[in-house]
Image (tube, rainbow, N blue to C red):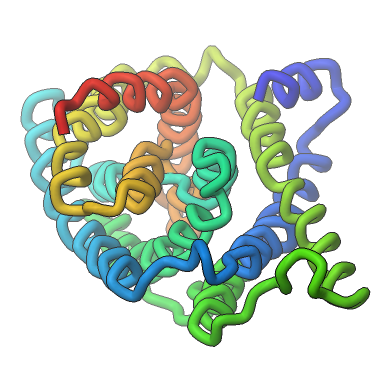
Length: 313
């Protein structure tokens, strides 16, 4: 991130370059990384059916329970720190939806080491439920407290990330993976090398772009909304510490619980800003919240992972 920040400040990167690189990551390198990760799951590390069922159930429960928690927290904040009603819908979806793709995938790839490919596969399944929840509950909730006329569009469900996630599940279901070392042919070696090389571009490019995005924002305009600080503290510090025991107690697979928890730690999703712009809501406020959340995550994610390492579970 630091490299991206400096590169933007010295004008090596700019808004046009950032936009094209973001498109490359979201539509090419990240989908390829997902498929490559699944193809790398040979029979010795393939998760069992019970683990996949647990992931499906956990993902569904997360997007059922979190909206309830978000509603309660936002209503309490509305009374205690006077959050205006026209922003409450934004606060609710900002509470529920984290940047599980653009930041989540690269961080998982790095954090899970030799289990990185399996972690990406788990995250790809979670990504499907993220999209389903965001383009149903998220769309219907974002206009809460306003007169915005929102509607669910099936077209928005289709994205390269969503398609690659379904392809990954299909590859897993049919047991398709790269040949064992020394058992492939020229074609499979080319595919494996190509997918591996392009997919591995995702983590560094994504972090580079996060840093460049932070550098592109006028800082003076960002830190004027003090209510965001309280919200971010609750979202990225308080709730993770309170809910971590639930992840560990009810999800016995340690890698799976780690993946779900790290995804839970991600800062506010950029998708919130997209829908705020689409429905003429307070997009300036949304961009401030995303910026502060992303900036805070640089400290919050390692801090929470360090603190939770002391849990006696």
